[in-house]
Length: 326
Figure 1 (tube, one colour):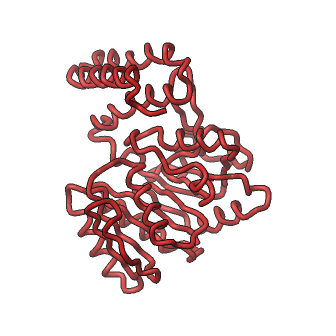
Figure 2 (tube, rainbow, N blue to C red; figure 1 turned 180 degrees about the vertical axis):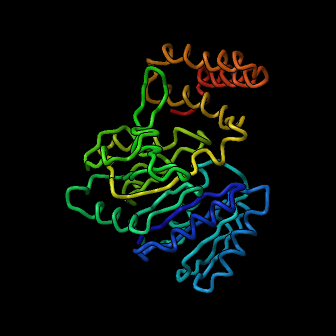
């Protein structure tokens, strides 16, 4: 059994389109958990109505007031579970909420497929992931990625995996904006992390490593998760035949600019991640982080530059006072 997790925040149209693609999966041995991260539009109602109108779907709704205390009994026969969170706690928070629900309900599952809600999935993807994970030489692989394409350019890659530069505290997607001519069609592709838009994760990995850290809110969660896994001997892999089409940035950009929240998280988390895994590199990373203030000044975005500067100062104080856990 595979549990597919989608986190929605003010993106019900994307979520419904993603669900429609999941219903076409060739492998039917799955359940879907949709977590609405306390959307401010009518996402929860729109998703509920869409699922209810499909007579083949058995929907189980969970409205959370205090974490998971409202859950007493779970209808195991349900194919879909819709959770309404009490707050927008970010990417990791929403996904962790779904995994906690699975454990509380004592679900029998082997894999968790964490998907961005603004993705569309090829029908054979789940079969390919499961077959790869079930192979004997993949038993120590805790997480798999596949090929991510741009939704509106289905032959152009968003990435096949990520590499991280500890000197700059920046990540980069392998194959970004390259046309797919099967140049990455090899099983043992070397990369640093699986791109967070589609992560196929083994249950034993989660039990061993724990959940994603929620204090990142956005960005760096998957890299942090991978680093913690590698420290315990887990490997990450890649299934080149899996195809996921992603509307990159649909929830974090507006009118061509990254949102204030996303901008703040990117800058803050570069420092936090470096502090946790490469503390000796902080002195090298700081000038590059401060340059992010200058770049916004050069673009005439003075208010955003001031916000980013304040975030750098605030995060630096928290690091100095030991207020951010290792």
